[in-house]
Image (cartoon, rainbow, N blue to C red):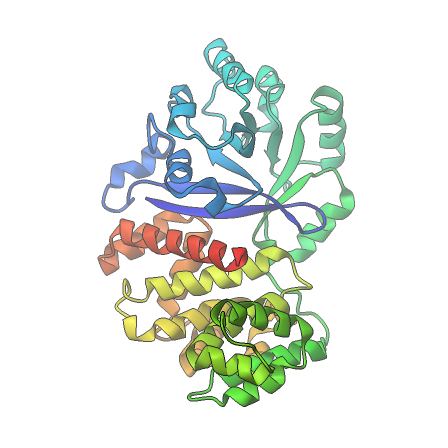
Length: 407
């Protein structure tokens, strides 16, 4: 099994939902699967299987989850497959669900059970034929490159006032800003949130420089705990976060100073805490998804280390994943952003030049999070990597992320 979450944003860059894309087979081990992708899972729904095994709270504690469903699995016993609240799940259908009586009646049954629907890959020419299905849908994904949103807004407002429009496959921040200005879309999906705006000169906020200084201290070999404590003491948010962690350990001890608190943690635990705490602070003026992306990439990369025969480089891979969005955090080109932090030559090569020994795991992670399963399958075949190992590495990263944000 392979699975990844793709966020849907509103016009304030707040994540409102996730699409859960998954695949059960390896394209290259089973070439015939490429032409029969719609039958993936056949009578079962991979996304619901993942939710049931992991728990919907691990994927997201409060967001809707869009689950792709094919024209066979839609007739399965969905409630039995997954016990998650129906209102949290949006069944994502496409034009393989035909606008005939059999499918329409089944959609009505599921709607009565509390499920909602989104539809994608529906050509404009098919809108009228799909009228009865569109009346049952809560969302529709539109190809913003081929559709005039002004006309679409009038059309859907008049005929389907209860359906929300989603713009998909948005490549850049500029494209997103243009669509947002035009109005009409409820949600936006694409890689635009991972694309930094680097035009013009951008001075790094002095507070962020403080965080970067702390990162540089703890990434030095055998760093001085008092140096770290002095930098932490300059920021109230970091002090509070540190004391929360240490107070759990110091049940019978009174913490008398920040230096005392750092000594209680020790180098190893202080470095682990700093990594997550500083990442949160660096991303405060960015969409929450940037923090999530940075930390998930870091943990996923670390988990992939032994799978790519790089167990000795697990911490280096963790930092590579963490700093893979440093350009977004600092609004600078990646090479300039990396000049501000202490990183290895291999991390720089991977993030700036896309080469070097760490570049393949990084490339793999990018393809994985985009649900480019064909390329992911190709790499797994070449490297003799088991699909279940990769799935476990990703699921463990999701569980780790949930734990650190629930503390």
